[in-house]
Image 1: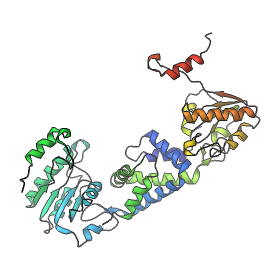
Image 2: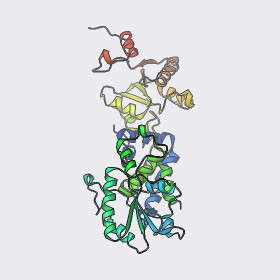
Image 3: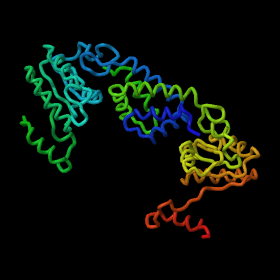
Image 4: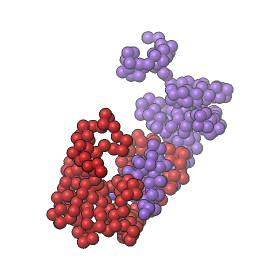
Length: 199
Length: 199
């Protein structure tokens, strides 16, 4: 008296989503079949289209439907600045500041020795080749301030400087609206060390 | 400089899953495209197959690939008992006891006035017709002991008794391994009211 195969297979297939365990997968399956068949059909189509069309931009490594993504192909961006981020989501956050007009390189990850992700898995050679195109004046490291992001930044800084490139790191300090009372000690220490002259 | 359409569409389509907000949908999308393209392809296929094959069993209303599900079509089950549950997940839990050998009816929901779910939305007429097939001797209400599950049980009991059917409700009390010290007052009160003679 087993459940229909199409049902158990959908429950199993949903487990490929990060953070979805057996119970969530079951709940999602029943919800889709009972209340949102239209949504399920749309999702199936979107997955197919995304798998068929999306590859990585040859220059910035972000997802793209074309060989070069719109940003890398644009003449509006400053080819002298290259900002390195871990993920497309981080890239979007930087774009939302409307402050940076250079180009990007998306690592699609970070150095994580415990999970077996090193410079080779992240294709650092592709990044070095990209940074040494002769146009880049400054490389801005915008990886996260987590242990893994910091390790990645240190490692990249060394490699990039060895190729004669100017390398900078985005600033660490108190966030806008931040209060000393609620900031952690490490952040306050950093904010003191990186203090700027008032002009 | 918008993201590729196939990417934004997949992020939007994943929002049809219950409990998935914009951030989760983005994380899931990047994960699938970067680390699990095989899983994404499998999910797209599973959705298509499930949508194409699964309907509701004509007798028990549970998901089925055939007009009658394997359980309803079986001669091994006691057609004199009909257990009413809210969801296929609840049905599976009852089956796991290996104690019940009757048939089921799956409501695929519960009365929820605040969300506009009443007897009509739950197709109670279909259930009443099923229960009045002349074979059913006892209807066992196994809806949850939540407010909505209790309301559903009370409502159904009235309707079913009006058709001359014997109706019972699964017992409420302390769980196996339960300790009075940690049980809530309502549960202890119920356990006292429903006490059984020791033989």
